[in-house]
Length: 299
Ligand code: NAD
Image (cartoon, rainbow, N blue to C red; front, side, top):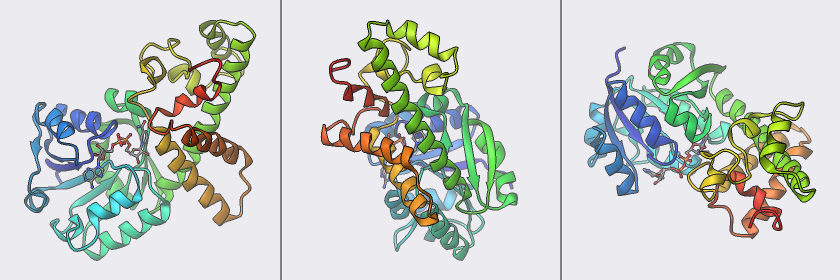
């Protein structure tokens, strides 16, 4: 099956650079977002605005969604006006949002009932990975659909993993993000301890990055302003991975842990810190703004 025409819905921090990479690879894109500014940024790069979703759906060989949470994804696909009822049979539907594994399984079953092919494909790599086209994709769905989607996903990512059947991709994603939240909160705490003792955050970060505490956050996403010039921390904690989305992912991970009977104290601690951020009105900031909980260190 050759895919040329793609309908891309959700042009936020992640979706916009992902869509831009598809355009660069020569795909024909129709795009949609609730935010007109997000749409016009993409039409300036060569995409068409999918003003009429029914028409855009009829023309699409594939649909990609990159939306905040399960309720948004369901509202786009399901129900009387949902895309599932408007797409041609056999269309490949790829949802890249991070949502509950149960929601992904429900969407896969509904897609099958409409004779569509559905893959969940949550990503890792952040906005820098989205811009560079180096995202990791964690796919849940059939092996045949995975093979069809792979060339398309390789236009936006470097590592394309088939995690297993429906739900497996989302499960891999919440395991990864629970670990990421633990790495972020732990790294912020270690930096705060060093800075309280008079160490330079850049020097301390360099030491820990090259030592046994080294991790992805220290290498690519340092939560202290100015250590990595291009990190959200250096840009007022804007335009990254919103703390609200990390809290959503921790809720998904911990709900799942309860379902399978796993105690997850490290994840619970990280969640408590993000709830603290919520109480301080910081949920719109990047998730590295957890550094602001050390109030005498970062204001
Ligand atoms: P975002 O809030 O920046 O973007 C979401 C976009 O969806 C917004 O532009 C919004 O207007 C649009 N939208 C919402 N409902 C819509 C609808 N019904 N129709 C059309 N557009 C609609 O979020 P993001 O940071 O791009 O994250 C998207 C998903 O990717 C989330 O599930 C998140 O957990 C996941 N994710 C984000 C990152 C990151 O670093 N930001 C990394 C990995 C995974």
